[in-house]
Structures are given as C-alpha cells and as structure tokens.
Amino acid sequence: MTILGLHHAQITIPKGAEDEARHFYCAVLGLPEIEKPDALKDRGGIWLQVGDRQVHVGTEDDFDRTKTKAHLAYAVSDVAYWRQRLQENGIRIIEAILIPGHDRFEFRDPFGNRVEFTQLTTAE
Image 1 (cartoon, rainbow, N blue to C red):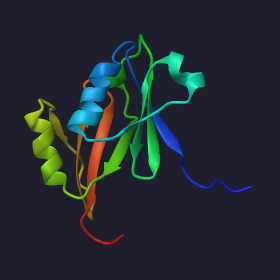
Image 2 (image 1 turned 135 degrees about the horizontal axis):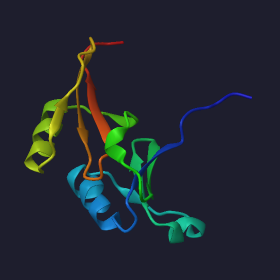
Image 3 (image 1 turned 60 degrees about the vertical axis):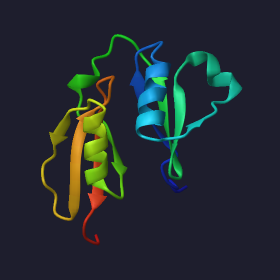
Image 4 (image 1 turned 180 degrees about the vertical axis):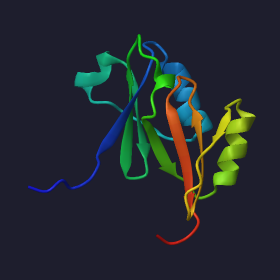
C-alpha cells in the first residue's frame, strides 16, 4: 500500500534523434545506456542508468520543450566541473535561484529539455 520510491523519470527528444541523445547523455554526461526490453525497442528512444534510478528518453514530435519548467535535477559531486564541461560542449548555463545549502545551475539539453545540476554544500 506504500509508494516505495521512484523507478524512473522520462524526458523526450524528437523522433530520430537517438544518436544525438547518445552523444550528449552518454559521451558528454557519461551516463551509461541500458538495454530496453524487446517489447519497447520499436518505439524509439534510449534508456539511461543514473545511480540507482533510470531516465527513459522517449521520442515525441511537435512539442516545444523550451516552454516548460518541468525538469530533471541531477545531484553531482562537483558542480564547477560540470559547469565547465557543459560550457566546453557549447551548452549555455542558466544561473539558478539561490537555495541555501545548494550550489546549482540549470541548462537546456540539445533538445530543449530543462536540466538542473545541484551539489549539496551543507547537510540537510
């Protein structure tokens, strides 16, 4: 009767953009791709492992991802490293509203999805 936790979150990319998604999410961010079940392979997209959770990258056309505040927030151990790495890969950093105990920033992935990287700076 209890919700046990979050298994995965899903974002979307345009249909046919899987190779670009693999480059950004696997090569730039270093997230490992995991195999989708056979029953879902024909639907497109890719699945990623993020710590003990998954991010499913599905495909969806005719949707403006830049118009939503919906986002995934990734906990990182070195927010300065990620700021520099993303800038080196042409990603524009968006300064986030300050939250005590967190060093964080936002950006849009190559498909317009909003993303946050946050590093805990004090114990919550």
